[in-house]
Image (tube, rainbow, N blue to C red; front, side, top):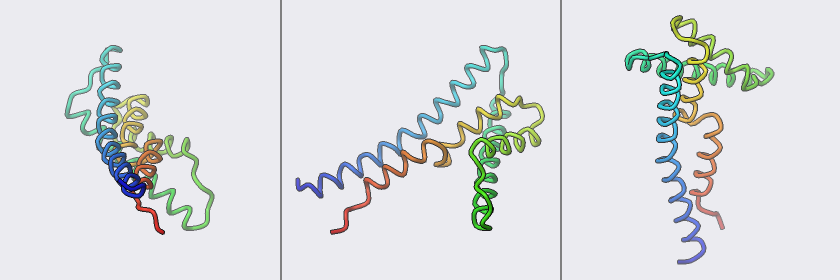
Amino acid sequence: MTPDTTHTFLGQLSTQLVQIILPILASALVALVVMALKKLGISISADNQAKLDYTAKQAVLKMQEVAASKLQQGLERIPGAQKLELATADVLAKLPNVTQAEAVDAIHAALPQLGLGAAAGITALGKALQTPKVQ
């Protein structure tokens, strides 16, 4: 194998591993959150969990759009903590029976599923390793 072939192979392998591992990690995170809530005596039905997951994803996407729009208008960047607060408020407004902790946990679980948050850097790294070198 030449160095370029090895680099391309390793890049493709790392990208495939990231694409496999991220959904598994997100699912595991959701499962851990549900288990923690059950230990606290809070149980979420599958239907309610699906609504929460969907609403959290929509809130995250909405915040990303609002943040991008502000940047395009030349306005100040919205910090991540403020995006989390706004997304949490959006979830709580739509699902009043959900606690703030449940909303925050669902939003954090939604981030890697949407390719955002801390996991976005890992995904970008995988894509960068996959991109062949230009000579």
